[in-house]
Length: 123
Length: 373
Image (cartoon, rainbow over all chains, first blue to last red; front, side, top):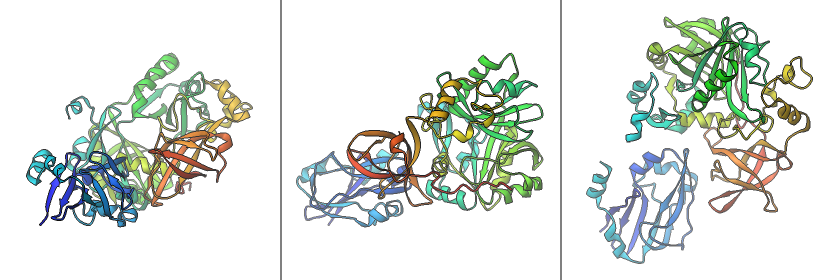
């Protein structure tokens, strides 16, 4: 069973039952950023820390960061995004995922929003 | 959003909202940065078909009187006196030290000169004109007019439907035309590198004219985002980036804009603010200059990125940078030391504490398609 949580930075984190999670940016975020032209994909095995920058997202307009919503180790990356960053514009919540992590502290999830809370913060 | 209340709007504001534009503050105006199509597609549409730009935030000024041309020559290093009627020329307001206060377009009319200046500089430009020229000509600010740009390979087809007379207009010429019953001043020029037109239209009629253009299937609204990427590909300077009070026209590689008549051996040599410095630089060369920069790989290198040579010495700074939709790769423009300015020079840009390999390349990145007849 998995559930999706959201951050104030407009990222989503799909929490799988096995201590791993998939991370991406929300549809709202891709809409705000505009056409993406470059995504810096981190390496598998990289340790990430909650609140720190993981990846750089460049749109036609500007550069922004993917901020780690939880701490852990990257176990998979969506390397397709290197050549096709527009996948994030097309399907931010699905094919446009960024990284998969093995979480080191699942209690960090408690600070995150559920879908209803995130929608409320958009309105 | 409370700041928006203080922003000015153009006569086309409601049309932008109706088109779903994302409005941003720009030079004191609420302006469309992009429409639902998005910057990439808007950019490519302009290169392929025709894009309509609202540039009504720019300043339009009429210098009236028989002496207007001679007067304006005191402020620009450009031949205005011999600018033929209904021809247009690119010019620069310079200051005493040779730096640039603004860049502008000058058109010779029957009644004097028509100037188009940058939105962010217009109040300063008007004060500058009043300070120096108010005794020699009448300075009339045309704030009752809007300005539209129609740009792209299909621009002429669209314009010809409204005014068959545009067919014989060449790049940098002007005509008074009646478009759909509206009296307009049209120039064949623009800021995209494409063939196209800029249309000065009475503010009250701007909406009506824009709707005529938008009724054409080849025409789409294009926002400021694509306007910037289009001009960057075309190698055109943006004031505040490649041009500023600290950058001279020679450093900006605009020697072509310094008219022969105003150069050291010209018939009206000098006689403008900063002439001594600019003529000396023209003669002897400059320590730094504007160049094209091609980053390796896909990571954009943006304005402010510092450039180093292979020995780690700082040799310049990126003035504009982004992504080229036409070439599908990043491009940039920089001011670099002249000994690092040769095409194919290898440099390194600092981006987020990483070094990105870049090369100096010739400008423009994308061939200009002006109609010269």
